[in-house]
Image (tube, rainbow, N blue to C red; front, side):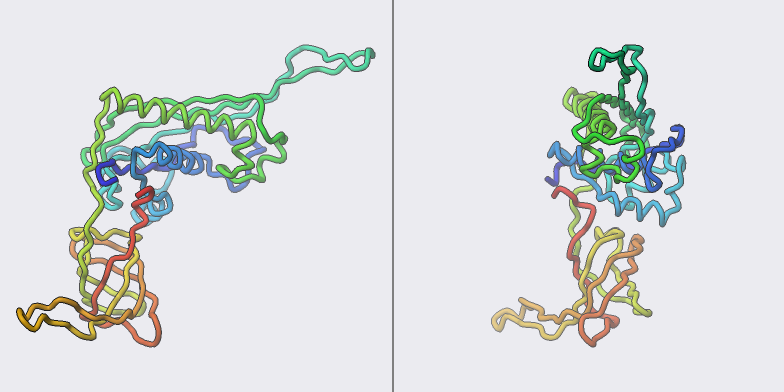
Length: 305
């Protein structure tokens, strides 16, 4: 798993799409399709994927979330913060669902007939793979899908109530066209990797997180010496412990075990080179203090590990 490259999927640009009246009021098409692609890449069992909620949180903090703000030049900055080797970014080129008359007439009981119609959904994406260290665009691939019959039959007035990516949405013709487009992109991408047209390597391998020390406490935030050089990143979960006793080997005098009490749990909210800010929740009636020990628990950026 450590040898697999870490990939982050940035919300796609959907600004060129003309908004339709039947789209759900809460729909963010670019973000929804990025979530679907993240899952599809994870299912190939070939890559590590950055958790999308962590990515969006970091981009918001860095003021990089606005449509059109993310480009290859900012990829290196994002990658260094979240530990991604490569970013996938681009745009949704098509996202439509049309019903058109075929011109044919379907007979009804021998007494005339009604006009026939055909409904078809089309989804297209144009996405690039960007090296997060050099900002170089390594490749650009398309994915397209269309569908005329879904497992769940709904009208335009009904689909807007579904969340993009939900099982109900994915069973409509629009959802099935989306799945085809995303799967087509993944297939094109994987073919490029297999044929060595692009080479992906694991540069930001899973981090070793040594224990740190609390340097300052203010309110419900502590500052610790667990910065990015020690592998800590925004979103990491930690525990704050207080040393209670050291056990020494009587023959060598070596400290073989340090006994501690759990004082608080916390989440890294800001990570700099040598320090990080941690928002904590106390356990019991004790509060963290300078000199307490910070222990790494887990990182949300290791989905699939």
